[in-house]
Length: 396
Image (cartoon, rainbow, N blue to C red; front, side):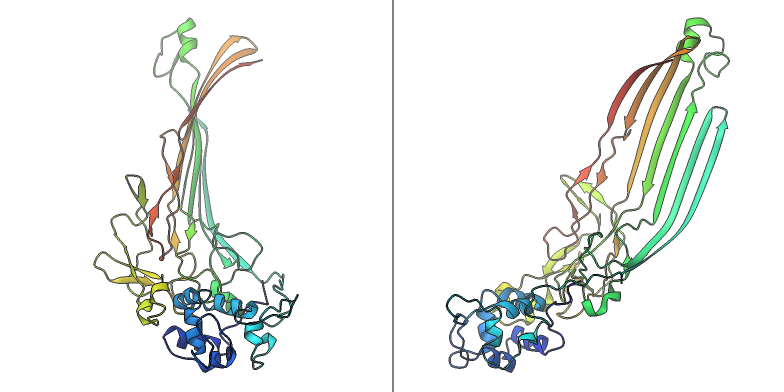
């Protein structure tokens, strides 16, 4: 994890940014930028420090959308409004120009960009109930069924989809808040396979009285299947980053976490008949008029227009948490048909036909679950198609 991450919650910066976002003037920025021109006039003479930030193209979008970590990171390194010595670039000159704020006001070690601390503080738990039923060869039938009912949880500190070494925690000082089901969690996994001797040939149900060539042609057929059914992967519903990474929204009205994927035309929708719509995030109504145009946050409302999900406030973790929704599940059935013809005492001719994804069933991709996207809930990908293969083999 990066222990040199920008701090904006313990040094008064967040309150100053909230004041700036709402259209007020924060004394901290009047002091920090006094005498500097950030592009709209000299702070202290023609404009306030907060107004200078609101009008600066490098800061205004992050301030409007409440991504204060991005503002803090930029303040720690930028030289906007300053004059640098010839042949030198002093990172963070804007922050330190007044002489009132120390070099480590935002990060602990400003002489370094990133300090990665590697440890094994993450944890995981796996619980499961595994059952298996096996039918040994009985009247030409052999089958096995396996069901796993499980739950994998932990603090992974990585990307929303799991994996990787970088600790992208939402809040570095509260890593346990990221405790959730893991990306590899599958609630149910059901698998099975079987072979069935078809009842064709001499003394069988069909062709009981056949002999000679006809008997050899119709006897010895074997049908096999391999199938699997599994729950979908747990997915993040994402919002803007309100602390550091993996922003999650707040639930403000009943929101169903169970999908009913339906495919219509070229797109599918994870929520089926439940039509959610994208509306302006209520927080955008509270920003300064100068910032209104740059507040791009949106919320999710139900069919009646009632907001159910909205972006969390700056500095707060969204109440929905990580990976609250299971994506579309998957099922598949493969089959094969095998016939062996004895052509001599120690030689057989085997004919085999394999069908992968026998029913040509598509597997749905994961939906877009970004509440700030215009395609929330849409599934735009699917894969899976039937393939056939034939073999002719001489066994000796």
